[in-house]
Length: 508
Ligand SMILES: Cc1cc2nc3c(=O)[nH]c(=O)nc-3n(C[C@H](O)[C@H](O)[C@H](O)COP(=O)(O)OP(=O)(O)OC[C@H]3O[C@@H](n4cnc5c(N)ncnc54)[C@H](O)[C@@H]3O)c2cc1C
Image (cartoon, rainbow, N blue to C red; front, side, top):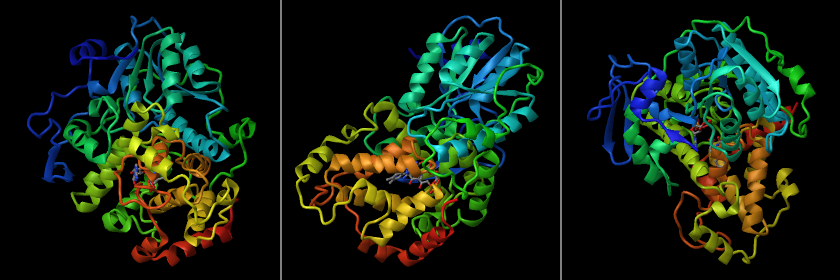
C-alpha cells in the first residue's frame, strides 16, 4: 500500500526541503513558464533564480510506515537512479542521516536474472556503477555492491538501518521489488522519485491517450518541478564501516563471473557512467542543440544527444539534462528537445504505470486492435522470419541499415526506429507476431532497451498514443510509413554509408 504524504506530515517526518508553492506562473526559484502558442512552451529562467535546493514532497511516498529504528546508518537502496549526481533519493537519504548524526550507506543488488538483459546491458551498467562507486566514495559514502535479487539485498541491509530510502522505478519488476522490500524490511521505507521531472502521480492518475492530453498536465507542473537540486554534504562518513560485497571498481572482473546471456557483444561506441554521459551532453549542447528541431530527424547526421542509454540506467538525471538545455537559452531547438525529454518520455512512464499490459499486444487501443485484426488476412508483399529480420536480410537497404546500426552500436536513430517498427508490422505474418518480434529485437540489441520508452515506442508503431489515419492494406487505419517518404525527406545514401562504415569496423 502506498501512502502519499501531505506537505505537513512530510515536514514532521523529514525536516523537508520544501519551497512554498508557486504563485501565478512564478515559482520561488524564479522559473517562469511562458506559453506562447497552445503547443509551444518556453522553458526559461531569470538570472536571479535558482536559489533553493528543492525536493518537493510529492516526490516522496511512504512504502513502509513504522517508527524510525535505532540503526547504524541510513540505507539508500539504489536501483533505478544509478548515479551520485542529481539524485533526489540520495540527497534525501543524506539529509535524513545528517539529522540523526548517522552515516549513509548505498547498496545495489546485482541480479543475473534481469528480464531480457544480456552481456551488452550488463557491461554498460557495470561501467556506470564503477563510476558511481567512485563518486560516492569522494563524498564519504560507502557503496555496497552485492550479488542477489535487488529486493533481498536491500532487505538484508535494512536489518541494521534506521531508515531505508528507495528510488522509484516504473516497470512491473521494479514495482514488485519495491513492494517486496516494503513488506520485508525491518525499518521504515520511503521512496523518492528522481528519474522524472514531474512525479507520475502528480501528472495524472490514469493512463493518458496521447502526448496532446498529457502535455498540458506536465506543463502546468514544470514551474514547480523543473528546479535544481543541490548536494548535501554528509556529516558522518561510512567509509570505515565493514561490509561484504563485490569490488564495484572492477567491472570486467564482475562481468566475467555473471551467469548471463552472452550472445550480444558489449558496445564500443558508448561507455557507461555519469562522466561519459556528461561528456556527450556537453558535446550535444555545443554542437547539436542548435538546429535540433530540424536536424534531429536526419538519420545520416545522427545530430541527437544520445542520452537514452544513460537515462535508461539512471546514470544521468533527466533534471540535470533539462536544466543544462534550458541554461543554453530559450529557442525552438530547446523547446523541441524538452518536448522529447519531458513530455514524450514521461508519457511512456505514464503508460507503463497505468497500463498493466504494457508489454503485450493487448496494450494497444481498441481501435488499433480491431483494425489490425480486420486486416490480418491481407496479403503481405514480403514475409520475413524473425531470423531473417535479425540478420538484416530483407530487400530494403534502409531497413537493413537500421537493423545493423542497432546491432553494431546498441542504438538505432530515432526516425529509423519508427520506420523499422512499421515495416516489421508490414512484413510479418500477423500483427501479434510483428509486435513481439519488434519488442524482442529492440530489447535484445538496444542499450536503452527494456525501458518504458521501449514499450511505448514499439506500441506506437501499432497505433498507441496515435490516432486513426487513412485506411490501407495490412495497417488498416494505423499510420503507415514508406521508403519513398524517407527518400523524399532525407539523404538516405548518407545514412546507409554511415552504417556501412560501422559494418566494416564490425562488432568487437
Ligand atoms: C520502435 C521504437 C522503439 C523505441 N525504443 C526505445 C527504447 O528502447 N528506449 C528508449 O529510450 N527509447 C526508445 N524509443 C524512443 C526514441 O527513439 C529514443 O528515446 C531516442 O531515439 C533516443 O535517442 P537520443 O537520446 O539520442 O534522443 P534525443 O533526440 O537526443 O532525445 C532526448 C531524450 O528524449 C527522449 N525521447 C526522444 N524521443 C523520444 C520518443 N519518441 N519517445 C519517448 N522519449 C523520447 C529520450 O529520453 C531521449 O534520450 C523508441 C521509439 C520507437 C519508435
